[in-house]
Image (cartoon, rainbow, N blue to C red; front, side):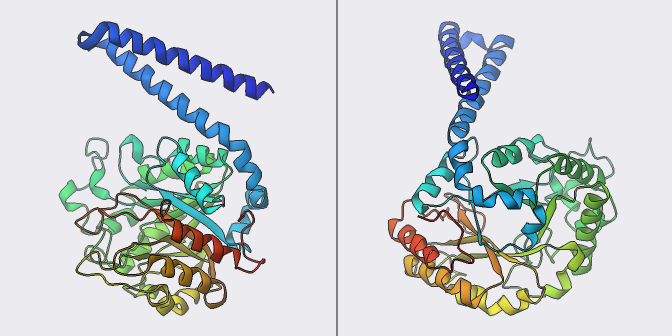
Length: 391
């Protein structure tokens, strides 16, 4: 009751503050640019933050109730390294200020995601530090974060990091520089913040490192040995600082092979993750691929590492084939044909232009046929792996 009263007072205070700010800004008009205007802008930001906090808090208790089955994982993090149930997750690009869009997707799929995926680039900007607020918000909802940590080396401020090469030269051999300790101040700060959460965090560092076209940390700029050395160096720093709460996902591109050359070693990897995204015929280089063609062809190579497998980005566009059938076949095949897969993370990205020249939409929230099929196929999974809460 006390918490509810506190929330109501908090909401009322935010509402009153918002009204006062609007009145003042209206009165002052365009002449208010200056310290007072900046103060009011900051106050407006605070109000927005408060409103978003309230939206999340109003749903937190019910959401945590639906994730009661997940509590043993939070109490015993070692369970993450050998889960029984399938752990479903989501990345949603619109869940920035609040997780409302994620909640809407959960309602549609009649489930609650124990894993929530976010992306953080390397760099010296505030948003490139360890995302403490985001991680804490995800935990408040009863879930665990997956962080894809992308080493964009050109984004470091030369004044703050004077020992680095010029931005235009950092990518060539950049992983060698990471292994040599040139980025240790950034990595150390990140690892310290990760440790201080005292919570399990999945970390997917330098994904698709074997793809020579996509990312600057790929083989066009770095050798496989450099990648392995960089991974081990980062891992050792985390371990030395006590950040053993981090669960490491090694995530090669399934199509480019050379897995063994880029594999950091069993003691440095907890999960193996791959992206399975069917672009259909949206681009000249793509075609309609079945899940089995995309994943099944490489399954044995990835399963041999004897780590749980995660589909770290799972999605299908609607151009060039039957999207509903693609989801139906892929989810029905998982339990029997690919038993090492222990997690599927939906890629719910509404405005993706990272690979194609045009913007593509991976979201399924408004695709009732695909949503219905996904629900039904997960219901059909054996009780031993089906996550509770599908209804």
